Image (cartoon, rainbow, N blue to C red; front, side):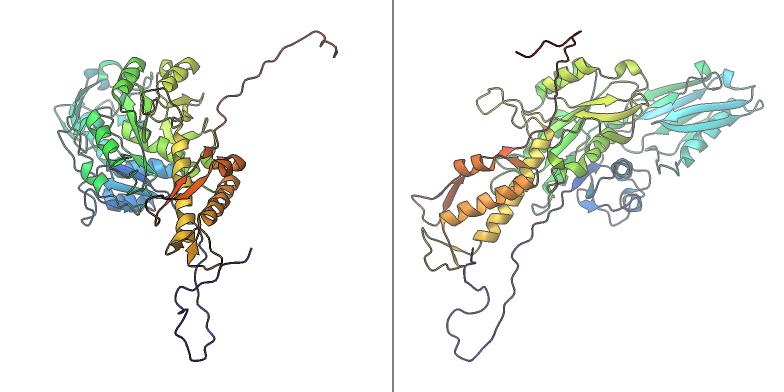
Length: 508
């Protein structure tokens, strides 16, 4: 097919002097990068230039440490995301609100008068405190406080989101580094072992809950529309926070609105038992732009904000892949690096539990024998159509990422073909300045074929048959288009019936 003739910079008329000229234009090359946005808190150690409610790119752990502080919530969220190999990670710090959770660790008399080691885990990080027979309770408490204050894991780069620990009268007192209820689930765990001098009443841990939830409105409002934040990790699952996210991602006035089209999918974590999970989902909005992973109410070593970052990051690179079909794949069994299953194995979900949760639009995980955690299936909160009828078209989490990639690509192709053009029913002169409805049909079918090659859509013939491109009957400067898109589905279930015979029946 010959290309239409036209110029962008060379005048089409009015030239009289001899000229041999070439002008250079791009034929269009599509490329996009999907960002993973982590929302959390920065610490006092953050760079002085780091502003609240402004997103920053994070290319390395050093970037996260410098930008948000070496033991901050956000640096630790980035650490988990980075451990899962996620690309395109950004972070935004929201101001803290409320009071800090705190813990006291009282050393009992049984820990003194003998030599050995006291073993304590905080957020699954090991602290081993050497104890000698001459150590007093105050000495042991001071050593615990010193170990907390100095803690850093050089292998994993893990830190503790705790303030400065102090010791007095045989008791250690430490606060969460940040204010808020989300830090109440920081796990202090005395490792059960006959060799652990902290077992029994030898170390008594008492927690005082923190209060408060930050506002996410300013951070979400400041996200530019020209940036593709495909996944927004929001660790706060309270009604106000998820309501704010719903407004930010609204199809009417938010990032999915017709006049913005900057998109985004939010992911959060809700902590509670199965009954609490199913109760929570009843109050969650019927929102195809949000979803959550269930987290048990006890025995979970890692906090909710690390679960949120880990599960989102584990699948980030697949969901960002619009060229080789990864976005469309079943995700079951993908390991979430850096997280471990609840210490209590009775909390590991079986198939019946996973099926119940998924039926209620709650994303699920599975535990492996080695204690690692893997994705089972991620879903959105969408369950009903506009009329309240059951509808699961946008239930799969990966479906909405397919939608984003498909629409981004179609916008690119249409803009490349139609920008700065005139519209006419026919173009007998094959002028590059003019486009027709038939041209737009051809452009869209060609784009759909490419999306089919990239593993995003199926049924090219059906798309071509359903495609309808018309000039508006009242406004001849406008073109209206109807697209029937068949996205590829993940292979979630394979059922086989294995029937055994002593001798197979003979064919008729």
